Image (cartoon, rainbow, N blue to C red):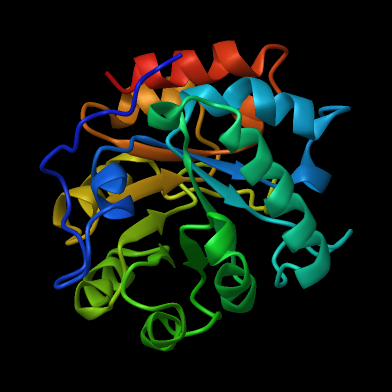
Length: 239
């Protein structure tokens, strides 16, 4: 089991915001996207439990059947997030990943006292400044980007980290084209905030992004025969 990494100099915390989750964020390299209904694993919760000690963040993402890009429905998102929090609580304190939710600022606010660190927002979701006003200064806010222009525009936003992609085609969101590792490296280099490459990421692509890369991964870990081994391999690939 890995211990929590020390913060590295890449990226900055939101100006004037308290430390805590942000210190852990700056040292994070792997963000696990947990979309239970999109996984081939027969028991998504068991797969998550095996991978959990080897990742730094978990983003809980629940989608309705046939709707991969719509907002997460609140009730199943709350239920799954509580299950993820319970699994994380079983780990030693220094090895617990941060847990965020996808899309839903209301769910992030409702579960903040239970341990949810924040929310990840897409370009069509609640604006980050509105989310910040609702969640307060301690919450983590992630923001999805898909171009260098969107990365640049995020520099003035009250966010804490970015997702950039898809870097490669991804089954989870049904996207068959990717932006490529070279553009992802350029985006990370020019981003004001910690940036996680997302979309079709596996250990081979992580090696192409390294050194110093941050990645967001879903099926490559959770659908692997051994999710713990897949998560360890990914961490090793990042250097």
